[in-house]
Image (cartoon, rainbow, N blue to C red):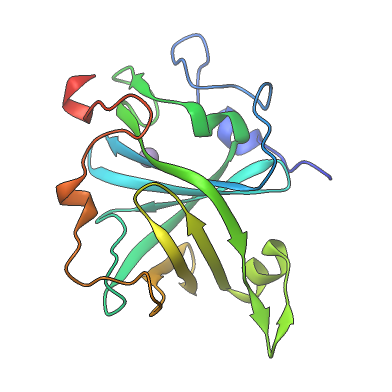
Length: 188
Ligand code: MN
């Protein structure tokens, strides 16, 4: 499995200043994983990442994920992150890229269900076509989600209309804590 470049990620950061992981060192998983990190930086947002070919493909979702299939959330593509980033929770010092607090809001395995006319597509193929269909198996988010490319770095993140959809649930409001430490961003 060829690893993608982390140069953009590394160029943005000074690893003498931040405790974010520099590289893929420790992490390995039996199944591909996703992670959602709540990031209280200049603007609060949720970073959605999915494992593909040794890196985490990443999007920043300003309003966070919804479990309501009628809601389309803007997702702004950001640089690939190292797989080890899925374990990062902590404070990025002020003055650094992304300075602020990060908690692991949700994490778990995911399945790639992307297809074109019934033929399965790899994550890369689906990404190139601008439409990813994934099935999350997190602690907070479960079920199908779609990532649909609009233009430039702008995508939409949408809950699929399946048995796990729930228009009344608002997990970003009712479940603000880390699935790893139980802490909220304000506790860091
Ligand atoms: Mn972020």
